[in-house]
Image (cartoon, rainbow, N blue to C red):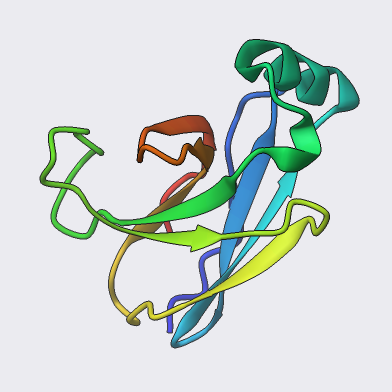
Length: 120
């Protein structure tokens, strides 16, 4: 198992997300959002923050230098409870490279990324 330290997104004004290997088959994601950012998201989507459908989108970036958003990215969405500030993501494989987006997935499937972790 890789022993990389947790990696964090670098956006200090908006939300931040960090991911780290929990064990050979899972990654733990931890995030933080300021109250100001939560209000900004509410205004943008015109939906109460607590009712937005938040997900963690786990990308396999093993054979890619970046996420392309061209329909060929390999990812898995995890519906989350935003009342928590961390979530365990299962189904990963030791030796692969992953990054995670914290975002909102609307009913019609559109995905809005709020922040992205550094790869591990």
